[in-house]
Amino acid sequence: MYKKSYRLVFILLTVIALLFVSNISVNANENAKNSSKKNNDVEKVINSQNNKTRTGNNKKTPSNKSKVKPKKAVSKISKLTYGQIIGNDNHKLITIRQLLRNRIAEKNNLNNKAAQGLINFNVPASLKSKGFEISKNYFTIYLKNNNYKVVKVAIPLKQLSGIILNRYLPKPYRFRNVNTNEKTVTLTFDDGPDPTLTPKLLKILRRYKVPATFFELGSNVDKYPKVSKQVAESGNLIGNHSWSHPQLNSLSKEQIQKQIAGTNAAIYKATGKLPSYLRPPYGATNSTVSNIAQTPIVMWSVDSMDWKFLNALQTEQQVIKTVYPGSVILMHDIHPTSVQAVPSIIESLRSRGYHFVTLPQIINRPLLAGYEYFGHNDFRND
Image 1 (cartoon, rainbow, N blue to C red):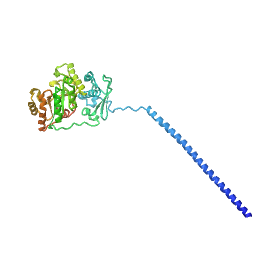
Image 2 (image 1 turned 45 degrees about the horizontal axis):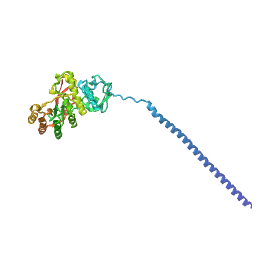
Image 3 (image 1 turned 60 degrees about the vertical axis):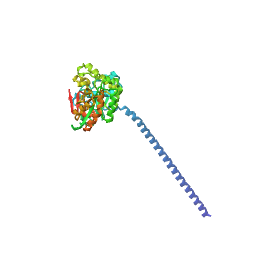
Image 4 (image 1 turned 180 degrees about the vertical axis):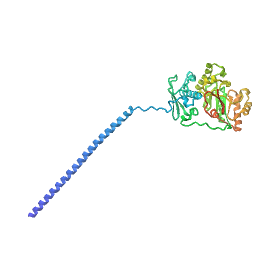
């Protein structure tokens, strides 16, 4: 009986002990969970505070940056003068003026008066002038108050190769070594445009793939602007040949300027571009004409005499007899016999090994304002 009692007591104590141990384990687990939960809550609070701090910093950063003014970009050569970057060459200075005027005209829809007035827009004023910047692709000129309300003008650097000294250019300019015996020639036509003959001539040039330069009279451009536009759209160059074909060197300064500026404006109205060259009628020029025009003056080295012969065969024979490598050939697109002679002239010269190029290709160097150009390696300074 006592043995059974002992067994019951032992079983009871064992059960109590197991319950006690189980309770301790449960409490320990709950405490561990609570502790883990608290730790997680603490981490969340810390992370939340950190995130707020980061967010706050991010919000402040843009405002801080906005308060900091960026440093103004300053060109390394902005303190230099025009004289320093072009070797104190006044012809190059005037050429930059011409390029500036051309750029203003191209970028703005100028009326007739404004287009004519560009001939007096003498910026830069002198070799000592400043106010420009050279970047990778552009030469930017900063302008002060002017009638055109233009603040700055960017000229592509490729147009200034050979004008600005190489050490100021991203890519040095190299004169191409041309064989002086290379058989190249260029065609030029004066006194047009003619409403009938010029379009016929353009078709011939397109058929033979020959480029040309047309020196047009302002009075004719004014009458036939669409024809002048066709000349430009066909890929040909257009030059100024005065308004009414006078001997410019016999006129007053005011008359010379009117002849040149009026033609500039007419060509600009017809084509959207100012002419880059002047060919004075009869080749009659002097320093006064040059100073007013402020453009390269293009003459010729071979006169076809088409104006005298008025005969296609004789015109062709005259060209063949007098042509030489690097020639600038003078013709006219106002005589039927002149236009009639062009195909045979092209074919005859090609059969003799000549090929036709543009005026700049014949000259093979930058055409500078104030110089007179007659042909390859044949240019003079008045």
